[in-house]
Length: 196
Image (cartoon, rainbow, N blue to C red; front, side, top):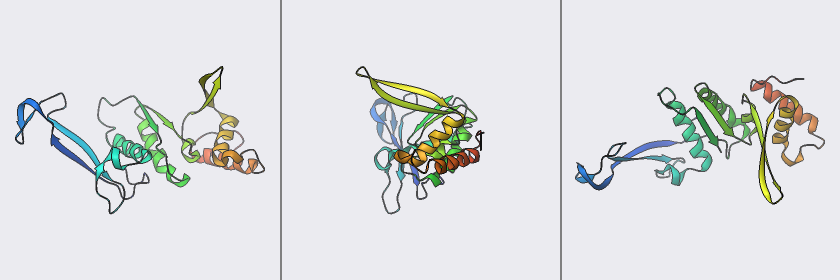
């Protein structure tokens, strides 16, 4: 599940050590306190690049790698009861090219079958797979920063995907080409697009 998420050399391991503290239980010769999750400390270790040693995921993985590891582990746990109804993924696409989006989009769709998934993305090939597309804009008004959230449908969604494809250059002479490509991507992602 995790390897297709632009992590081809990922090596994960769990380190389980007694949580030494003044306590009433002895584990491996150490006095430990038994708490709600037991008397052990569990840490997820990762090696993201060949030839490197394993380290704490928080220390060795980039923000995007951590987010994709979390996505993969979350999908693996999906069948367990008591999972969250809303899941938020930010930077799941950090550092990726547009071609790496389909496996990530597929896992996000899998998770969405059992709850709501919110994904913050700037990658057009990931955004086109969403059932609903929201645009968040930020601006300063009267010395205060405000956020606006708008649902994008129809041509507004096409324009946003085209903007993501073209960046600052959107609106120039390639606007028609970008819009046509945006419509193709949306159709491939499963969105019904007027004029496609």
